[in-house]
Length: 451
View 1 (cartoon, rainbow, N blue to C red):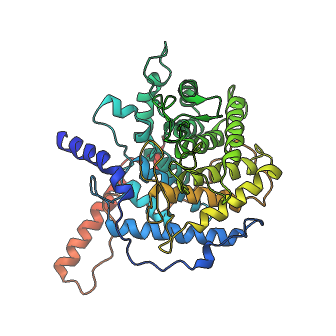
View 2: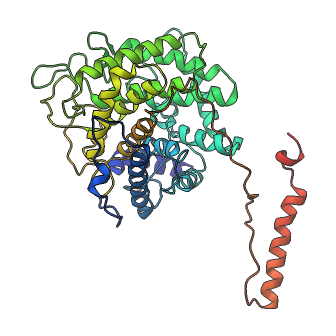
View 3: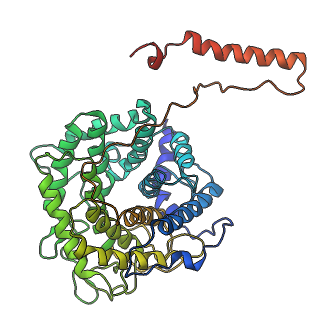
């Protein structure tokens, strides 16, 4: 077990490098330039948006499959927040289109890691919100399969977190001490309450959310500091350091929490008010080209576009319109400009460029900078843009309709008799099949024999 812990620790340390490693992707059909060109003045055809999302998702999956899966290996997918953000977007995409092969890829990843989470090597890491983000992927798979075992490890981890999230009196150090945490853990807790009917997860989430807010809210800017180090920091031009992606995590996390939060939850109006305040602040800071700079209050340090924060802002704005929280007449023009600019930054390899590398503050990026969370943000944004022409959808959202039951899965897979087999081989096959059938006939199955 000690060796496993060391390997998992190595995986977490290597994860930021893995997400942004500048390794060439495997051969993939080049993206036609016309696919990424959208008129910022008109509502895009949903089929065109979906085609771009399918292509980008397929390109990302092809790159990841070429690298394989393995704990601690550079550039490979693992259960950290970086991978989770892509898989969260992919899970939403395959609800409407599986042209990318994403449905199978999601299951392949989840089963490779046995629906497990990082962080078991210490209490601090058991509480780390980044290590809970992958839970959203397992919840999406569980919603389709109905298999309780797919969220059992996650629920156990969340149960460990609950007393710390609502601990009284309020500790000097918070569990969720940085802005990014509001994307990683709160939606998982909110959805766990929705999926299990147990309100304890949502209540604990609510307590810790507002403790984070009270420490990091920059009231004069209507946005979040990344963490408690930043209120006193200034850019080279003497302006406050308000990080785009940090605030992107917050607005995207708020949207995802509201999707699972009951309409009559006591503090729900506070989440809606916070969301509207942040959207109004971000609307004033949008660049003429439709994107946002990585340092929101200083467009010159560093200069240039940044797509990961922009993707989450685009997602949240479009989401707010689609669910009646934001005024369409005010925000739709901003969303259309943002989507056109964002799509234009998808590179010929199908991946979103100008994705700032993993970090905690504004840094410059280039066209060749790609990241899994960038692709995930693009997928989330595009899916909401696709729905802009539809009627408003009420909240909370219902869970997806479960898939029809699939074939019975056992540790011993079903095998056909080998072609041209010898009598000895046929006898071995018959013994194998008989042992497999014994599992079915003699083993207790709650789905069949009662719970």
